[in-house]
Length: 146
Image (cartoon, rainbow, N blue to C red; front, side, top):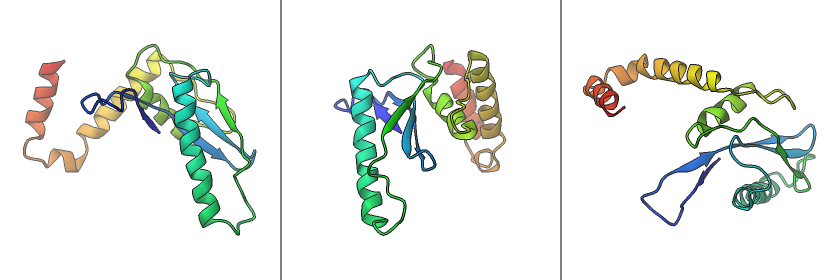
């Protein structure tokens, strides 16, 4: 999920990535957020709006299924909170890649550094990216900015 912080401002595209899992075995929705909790009204409103729409869609398309999700509660899972406003996407990707049942991956500052290296390497080594005429210029311009 992506929640904009200032949806009324078309120029502010800052926001927060977080993950919602549908746990069929334990009959619940699990929300993992590295920055917000169930005490944050904006976050819970955003989450509940999405989940209610998902429940309605499920009911419409799977009304004859033996699995129904309309009664599933929302569980806001405790996670390690990030220390800044920009790493939520990396936390979310780790949740998606490594979540095993109720064992939430611990994402540390060292993990974030390694993830940045891995994603940068994968991006730079991508054949499609490297065949673009302006790939080198793009990288050099980005390095100058930072």
